Image 1 (cartoon, one colour):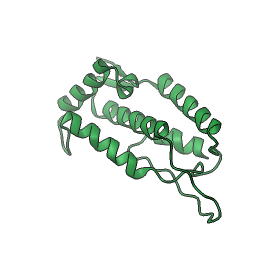
Image 2: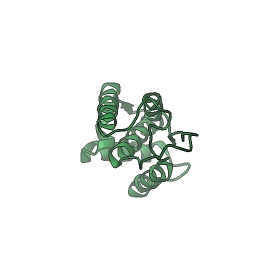
Image 3: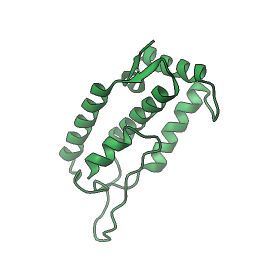
Image 4: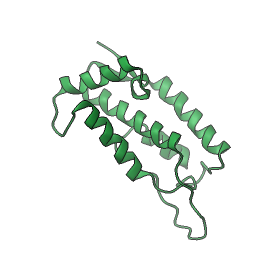
Length: 137
């Protein structure tokens, strides 16, 4: 189930990992590599949706998804569970998303040109976010 949650998180803004209702299971903190990749891919998705000159690169996102799921399994997380056996990392997602917005001076209602500049800056800087983007115009 985590596979579906992770894949969906790559395609929508504001991802969240569901919490397991079982009280006898101790959840582990979500690994940094998971949190960072979810934020990078969802941020790239939002940039592509908000800037006509950018597109998400699906093969690169799919490769990242596969690698993260394999790494989670190797680290003892159960990707078949809704929560993967990890604590909800939503607060950590929010911190990283806000850092991105602050870095580029983006805020609610920002114009498309500013969003495109942020996406192009990420591509030019060779960041993880930029690696998930393609220039289409």
